[in-house]
Image 1: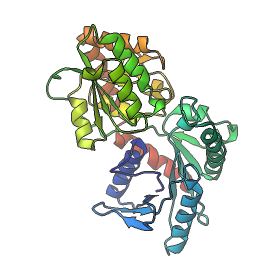
Image 2: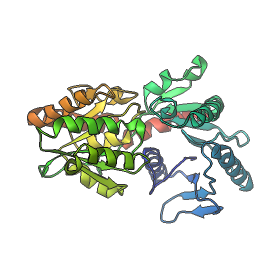
Image 3: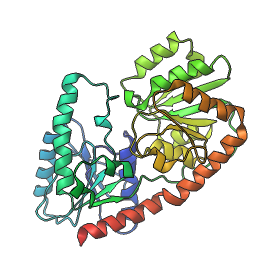
Image 4: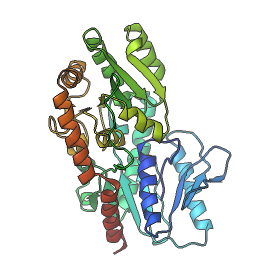
Length: 365
């Protein structure tokens, strides 16, 4: 299993990989995870898991580190006298790997780097286009089967012949762990979980909060870290919204669950998503959710049925959706109940795991 990240310090892809590996190990499969480690630390092995997690030396020269990481990965695999039945790579930001005739499965988690809201420098965007464009072509072309977390990923692939080997698996959530709250929320707080980066639309959230604050006793929890934290804190202060925002930083999984269970609702005003883990977790916790109708989100949520969907970058639309949930608790309760019912049926990790086993079977044929 090759992943750009792995818990505890990681985002949705890392938790996706861990959930899959946990179930593989539980079902008798021997699993080795290869992920990024630290610079000048050649190999570090995690302990306490029922499978090997090896963190290989990582040189932080984004995005060119991928080629160096590829060298480390291939060198490690060739140095071991082990025959692997299958290699499973998770993209974005994992390099292609070829080991003799070992079949390869690729999971595409989305194409956020392509989106114009990714506000990197002009040089960085050119470098990304060259490096990641080439990388994606190599990965998809070499993979025997390609799993996608949303059908929107299939639509974004330009080569028609590659679509024939793409299989929808979806993203997953542990619905037993992310369970509904046992008591009513103590305040009117809405929570966002994820990285504080431009593509998540958090400036839109601050603008929407400015439209609401004078009329509604609402507050917002931002769970996560990222390069936009200082920008957001400054904007919140200049807009006289400091009492309405809590910057909680990066939290462990248990604390994320506790924050969600104590919230009145959940917001995800992104400009792009594959199939967001954060939204799955909030829906599983039976929260009324507001999210942008982008990427794979409309495959997960239906407007006014199990969520409220809004156009991205529209503060007034977001403010109205928040106000709808605040003003009519019955609407919030109804969409929250439908949300949990939906994710338990289609996106519980046991369901997603069975889809993955089917993909592995096809790759091995």
